[in-house]
Amino acid sequence: MSKSYWGPKSVTFWLVGVVTLLMLYLGVSGFIQPEAAIRGFGIPLHDTADRYLVHIKADRDLFIGIFLLVLMVLRMRKALLVLMLTSILMPIVDAILVLTNAVDKTPSWIHIITAVYLLVVGWMLYREEQRAKTANK
Image 1 (cartoon, rainbow, N blue to C red):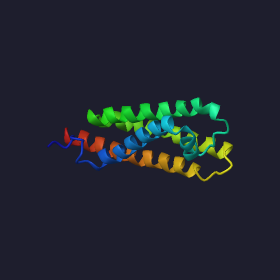
Image 2 (cartoon, rainbow, N blue to C red; image 1 turned 90 degrees about the vertical axis):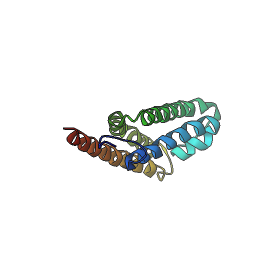
Image 3 (tube, one colour; image 1 turned 60 degrees about the vertical axis):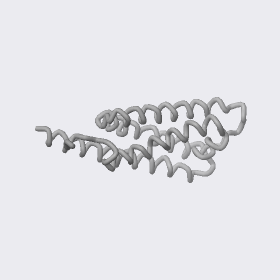
């Protein structure tokens, strides 16, 4: 197996898998139980007629989960690296939304931890990509 191989034997493959499963779960649960999903996000749903807003978030999460899964199946480490690092902005904005709009600010920590997790996984993917480049020279 070459040093540039990336797949189930790599720790980062499974770390990306955690994000993938979480996004798929959040997307599906947002459609099935929108009130519970938005409470878990950190902002209560005051009017059940506004469920469509939760569905917008669920659609985003489901798309990201499917996109991550496809990139994982295709073993596209470099694309996942770019996606992980550029996606850091989403949980940061989510944390700001919770901090500025929720009575209970506690759920903002999950968004902050998610941003840190994405940064760490992105950095690890970057390091693997650099090692693979060096090994192929």
